[in-house]
Every structure is written in structure tokens, then in C-alpha cells.
Image 1: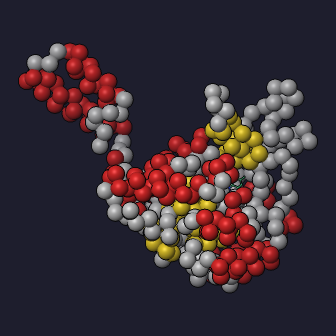
Image 2 (image 1 turned 30 degrees about the vertical axis):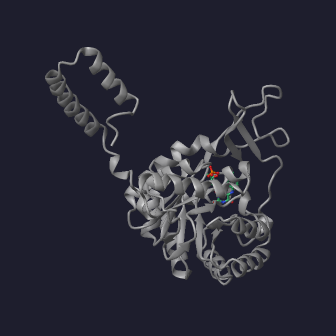
Image 3 (image 1 turned 90 degrees about the vertical axis):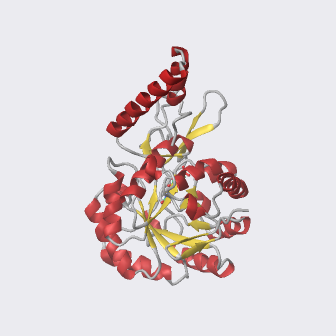
Length: 370
Ligand SMILES: Cc1cc2nc3c(=O)[nH]c(=O)nc-3n(C[C@H](O)[C@H](O)[C@H](O)COP(=O)(O)O)c2cc1C
């Protein structure tokens, strides 16, 4: 059995799988249940000081289904951060830590652009005994109207400044959760690192419109006939999330990365580890499959590691990062490889059909992979 434990920023995770901030960690009861089922950590639904300013709508989800299997490929939400009272959250976080001291509880927090407010939320929340903070710089809908969430996370100067405020007030590790709704993910991640973040979480949801109802002609999800662009998650976003994690891991080698976006299986998660994530978070996958999916994630990661001879998770982290290069370098590598193949072909007297087969398998990603 491979060792699934991992230490990240001084936090000892029993395994590298966390429930991401969202419905799966929406109150103390479900957080405790997740720990009892074996999740290594939970990032709770994002808290703020004044829940009365947070007003959700119904409906607030829309799904993109496969045309063939009806499986959910993409998931859009216009849900806000937690609308539950901050004081209740403080009690529940404390209870969770008392009952499950060996599982990692990370408090996701968000506040307005005010040093006092960020210091207050940090100081009051950390008294509960939580293990770390995740700063929500990334909720893409609703909150940006109040200059919060992605409105902060899209501005590197604000990311650095707010991270700095939190780091000064915090006695526990701080992760900054980044928005994918930007052009260059490394810029804002580096700003968080300069502000003192111990880790970067990526990605939050992508701004999206799932579709328009062709009977009513109203966009989805439809609230009293109207809609707004929402945050897209689930397996459809995984390729984008992998690219963000890769670029952040390469640009921010000093800090840890917690990867997420479309993880539903251990094989999905393994790719995030290979591209530099030390922990992997799951939100939509757990909403669709249930909390019990943690068993399959651990078993699948274990067999992946055994198959490749990895003894511990940290051996997997970043393993595929060296195999990214520039387009010009790819062209040069292919030129050299073709020349070498032509040389060996001449020696072996292969006919043209064999050369064609070799280059087809390269196109398919077969031979020639690093
Ligand atoms: C319904 C819903 C609510 C969410 N709420 C939050 C939140 O309160 N705070 C936060 O940081 N991220 C929130 N997220 C984003 C997730 O934590 C995660 O970053 C994103 O969904 C990508 O991961 P996934 O594909 O596994 O869901 C939410 C996602 C969903 C689907």
C-alpha cells in the first residue's frame, strides 16, 4: 500500500483529498460526516462577517449533459458564499476540530476591501482551532458586484495587499484561491506569493452561460425570467484547470498548490498531482457522486502509485512538469527525431508504410511520449 499521507505547509493530511469550498462543506454536520468517511481535509463553504448581506436565489444551478449518455459534463452555479451566521460557523468549526483533530479543516474566508474586516475575520476564525485559511479571491458572480471575490482576485496589487494583511494576522497557513477568469494565471498567483501566501488553490469556477431554454427563450438558470452568467465547474473544466495548475506550479515553486476543477476519479486527481498539486480538492464531483467517493479516490490513487512505483504522494507531485516546453522546442525535437528515424529507416531498409505508421503513432501520443 502506498503512503497517501502528505505534509503541506506544516499541515499533516491523512490523504491528499479535500472537499472544496461549496455545498459539500456547508455546515459542521456534513464536515464531520466527510471526516468520518475518510476525506483528508475539508475547505468549508466561504464565510464572511455579515451573512445577512448574502442572499441566494432558487434555482441557482444549471447542468450541461452529454448528448449520448446524459451524464453531467458541466455544472453552472450562481450560488453565493455561505448565507449562514458567522457566529454559528465559529461554534461548528470548533466542534469539528475537537471531534476530528487529525483531519485538516481549512476555513475559506472572504471580506470586503478593508484591512479591519479581514483582520477581524482572521482573528475570530482562527480561535476555533482551524488548521489553515483559504482566501476566496475568486467567486465570479454576485460578490464581484460588492467588489469582493473575483473582483479582488483579478487585480494582482489587491491580491498581494490583502494576502499581506491576512498573513500578518494569521497564526496558521494561508492559501489564496485564484480565479481562472483572467488571461495569465501566474500573475495573480505570484502576487499572492509576494503577499506571503503559503499556498495557491486553483481553480474556482469559470464564468459561463450553460444555455438558453428554447421554449421560454430565457437563459439558464432562470430566476423569475432572468439570469446572470454563473460559475462553471465539473469535468468540462478539467483541461482548463490542469493548465492553470501547471502554470501556477511552474511560476510559484516556493509555495504549495492545491488543485481542483472537474476531479471525479483518482485518475483525474493523479493528473493534478503530476502537474504540481500537493493536494486535490473536489466539489462538483462530490455533489454528483456523494461523499463516499473518497474511498475510490484513495484506492485508485494507491493503485496508480503502485503501478508506477511511487512510495509517497510527494514523489508524484510535479512529476510531469518538466515535459512542457515551447512550441519552437517541440518543432526542433521533432526535426531531430525525424532525422534520427530516417537514419535508422535507411539502415533497416524499412518501406515508406512503416515510416508513416511511426509518425501516426506520434500524432496519437503513443511512442515518443516522454
Ligand atoms: C454550487 C457551488 C458552490 C461553490 N461555492 C464556493 C464557495 O463558497 N467558495 C469557494 O471558494 N468556491 C466555491 N465553489 C467553487 C469550488 O470550490 C471549486 O473551486 C470549483 O467548483 C471547481 O471544482 P469542481 O469542478 O470540483 O467543482 C463552488 C462551486 C459550486 C459548484
